[in-house]
Image (cartoon, rainbow, N blue to C red):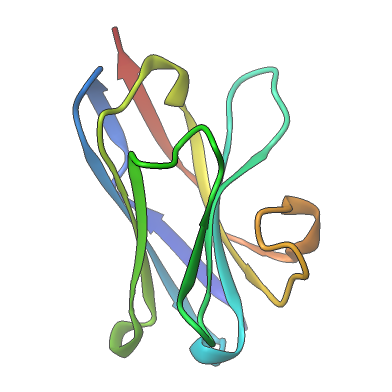
Length: 123
């Protein structure tokens, strides 16, 4: 059974940082891509960052480039999202997902999702 558990969300002031974790189980870590997505109230879920575990190449949405960094600890089957210089518009529920997508930033290409973690950035 595939399981993903996010943690690390919280309330932070604008300009601050948070580090999200996505612990996975039930998948062969190196065979898939892990994506981070977010969904703000009234908005569609959007891709934030993703990484193909086969080549460790990261991808980022334009809105987070230079501020967010995706990384992984393959020994622990865990992926991280370091979020720096947070802005109020980053406020959302953040989800991680795993699958074998063609476009790893496209949420529709993922079948396995975590429960999400809330990130709130105050101005």
